[in-house]
Image (cartoon, rainbow, N blue to C red; front, top):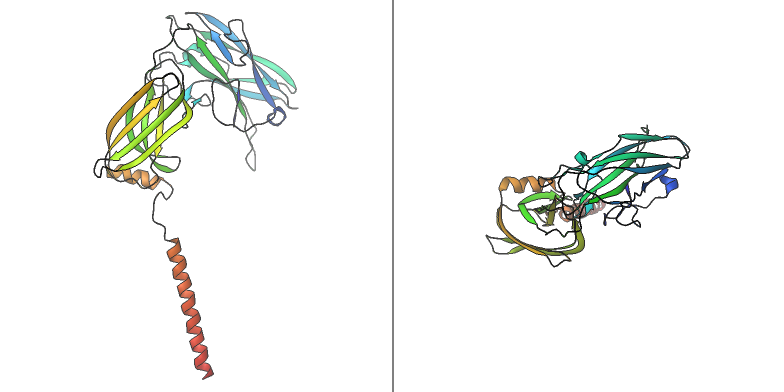
Length: 322
C-alpha cells in the first residue's frame, strides 16, 4: 500500500493510516529554490547544468530499528488514467531526460528506533535548457521481516519531485498510437493507446468515445468519461473501453475526442480490425464475459426431476396399498 506524502496532483484514493500504524513517515527538507514554500513536496526551480543536493527525513516512530528501501521513479500515467509515481515503468520513447540519469539516491537507509535520519539525493540538470516539467516520485518502503503465517500490510510513501527551469507554456499535443482488443479489469475491452509527447502534465481530461461495427453499422460502445483524468509528461495511457460482452471478429471504427480545461481538443477517427484469434484470446481471458448462463436451466431440471421422483413414489405407494 502506498501513502502519498506531498505528491503532485491527484493520484487516486488510498487507504488512510496513522503514523502509529505505519511506524514511520517521511518529509522533505525544503531548499531555497523551492517555487512555493507551502508545498510539502519538492517543487524546484533549476538552471541548466545545475547540481544540487536535496534531503529527505525518515522519522522512525516505532520501537524497533527500521531499514527502508529508496527508489526514484519517473511519473507515469496509470491504468486508471491518473498521474502516478509508485512503480518503475518502461520510459516512453519521447522522454528526453530519464530521472535515473538526473537524480542519484542511496538504495536504503537504516534508522534507529524512535529516531530520525536524513538521506541525500544528488540532482544534475541537463546542459540544455527546457520548457515544461520533469516529474518523479521519491519512494520509501520499509523492509519487512518475512512472515511465517499470514500476510502483513506493507506501507510505503512517495514524495513528489518537480523540476522546472522556465515559466514558458508548453504547446500541448496528444497522439493516438494504436487501437486494439484487450482484457482489462477482467472484462472484454478495446484499448486506445494515447501518447503525451510533451514535457507538460495534463489534467481535467474528458474522453468521449464511440465504436461502430463496419459490418452492421451499429454502435457497440458509446460513453463519455468526465472525471478529471490526467496524463504524465512524456507518457502513454491505455484508455480502456469496456465492451461488456464477448468480442466478435470483424472491422470496426473508433471515434474519440479528448479535451482539457485549457480548451484543447483532440479528435481521432481510426479503423481497426479484431481477428478471430484476438477475439478468442480476449474472451478466454475474461471472467465469463457474456457467456450464456445455464444455471436456471439446471435448477429447473433439478426441480422437475424431484417432482417426477415424488410422483413415482406416490404411485408405487398406492399400488402397494391396493
